[in-house]
Structure formats: structure tokens, C-alpha cells
Length: 230
Image (cartoon, rainbow, N blue to C red; front, side, top):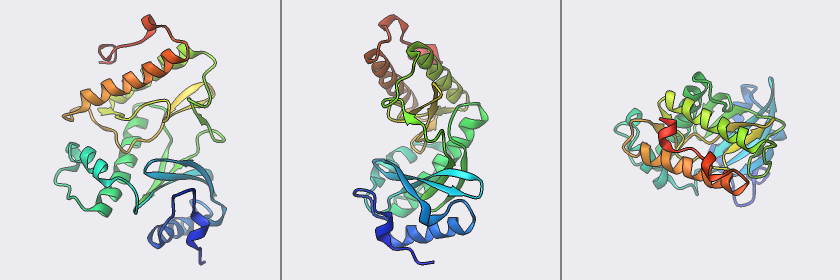
């Protein structure tokens, strides 16, 4: 099967021949049908598609090899004790970034955090189950019960800490609203709790969440502090 690059253009995201070969391999394994992909999200570093495979619909996250900020990726990875001795080579960093997201999702799920189930990775591509049909980000689909949804996020953040992880980029942009329950996404930047900047990232995560929920109606006295999480 020959697939042209033009078929995978999503706004400014264009996939090179290497990525197309990676997608073709995953297609051959039955994870999705390559010609049936449809765009879902355009991110800063990646594009996300919906695909249909042997076991139903999946989300296919593809990190762009040509125009992603691998320097930012390196800044996160070099502080992660699980990736000691990482070398500053662009493609290696991107592949490691994908592996990191897969590992973080697995660890989060083991502690009961609501996240997409990771199914497979190869090179710059990660495949996950599709949440909802699909579920929208909370910024676009506000919860019916704001306080209950917020407290559920706090509970998920505590579970994530029990998995020895800090999300490190949590906000209304990477929390889905699925049946009025939060689902955390985008785990490639997540770092271990013992990382040098873990406390800083945790404080930033909570600040982002608090600012958003205050904006949509939560009272100041109902907001949690980092000490409430620890």
C-alpha cells in the first residue's frame, strides 16, 4: 500500500516518509486502518487522530519529527532519574519522549488514575484507547457540578502522586470531561516525584487548575493547596 504525505496534512502538521512507514507498520498489526484516520486534536508537539482497528476506535498520537521543540523535551527528560545519560540527539529525544508517555500512562493506570489506556508505541507514534466518542476537553465541555468535578481532579492528582508522578503540565487543556468525570491526558512531560523540579511542577499544575475552576464559579475558600495534596 502506498500512502501519500498529502493525505496526512493537518493544518501545519505534515508527516514525513519515516512517520508514514511507522503508521503503515502499525496498520499491518491491526491497530487501525491507515486510510480511515480522521483528525482529532492539533497540539504544540503532536497531532492526534482517530482510527478504527480490530478492537474498535483508538486515538493515534503522532509526534512531529520536523517541528517539535526537542530542546524543551530534553529539559524535562534530563531531570528524570529513569532516563539517566540521555544524549541530546533530536530523533532519540523524541522517541524517548513517546516511551516516557507510555510508561507514565501505565504507572498512572496502575494507581487508578483515569487516563487513556496505552496500547502500543513505535518510534514517534503512541496508540491509546479512545476516551468517549470522543470526550471533549473540560475547557470546551464544562462540568455540570463544578465543585464535584474539581474535587475529583484533586483526588486524581493525589493518586498520581501515589504513583510517584507529577503531571507537570496539567490544565483545562489536557483534562477531558467524560460523563462528568475528569480524565487526564498528555503524559509525556510527567516526571517522578523525586525530580528536582517536581514541587515546582506540582504547584504550577494546581495553580492552573485552581485558576480555571475559580473562573468558572468555584469560591476561593473551596480551592486546595499543595499541602492538601501531599
